[in-house]
Length: 145
Image (cartoon, rainbow, N blue to C red; front, side, top):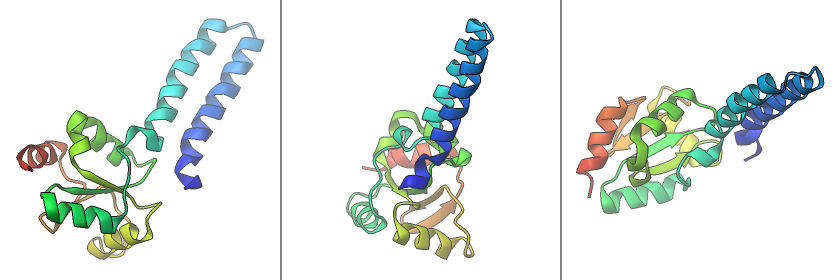
């Protein structure tokens, strides 16, 4: 749980430290611009941007019942963030599993990626797809009940 927040906290602290230094030097505008970059960057890399994660077992059970895809992800992953942003509101239709919070999810990802925890890994109809095209997944989410 804690390591999911390391990158966003580090970004926020570095941005605040740099902005503080600029304020002390009298560069208020530059400090404000720097904060306007670092704070959203920290937010985008936090678990808050993603839909609430569930366990891999629960995701598999729900997917079997409703046919929706299961997305395995981890905080700080640029490809996961890209996928999440490109899916837009449709992202909430998928079942999301944070592999850093769920050992069974991490094991499932390693099982289909030659022992690597490569994310995002999406399972649609029991078939895994590693780092799929967001447009393809958006289409899968549209056709899911």
